[in-house]
Image (tube, rainbow, N blue to C red):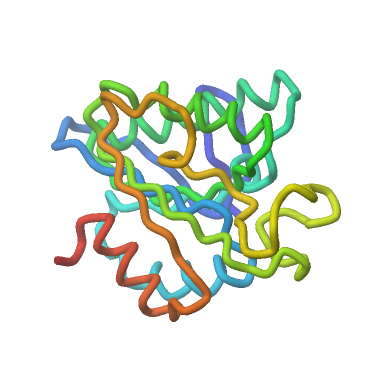
Length: 200
């Protein structure tokens, strides 16, 4: 477990984001949203050995992977977190960030905040939805019992998707992808490598 330092606020995470010492071309941010623990472990475990460049980082932190809440301090901390990720990308890092943003008021608020932070910054943002576990399996990015929504049919995802909302996407370099149960781990890894600019 490594500590991520954000403007003097220590947070727990599995990887570290560090801004490079010198200016360099802008990086990218890839958000992997909604993956279950099992899916995330398999995909990141296969992906990490292929990331040999020190400017490429995986950020898998409890702050962003726990479902968003209405707590003001927590919301501010998540905003600072996103701003630091953007700062690192602006200075040349490519960041893969795991999140758990659901189709609820907190998830919509977090998405709106993320998009507002990226707007006009000219840092490419890729959004990958990986919420394909059955709704009754309990293996989504959050426990079904805590975040159930009877308005959703079994075939619908629990997670939020930027292009399916009313948010203004103008001024944001956004690419979206969806992983399904048909994707193998290797196919998911190859897609992430492509979005991170590491393959063609």
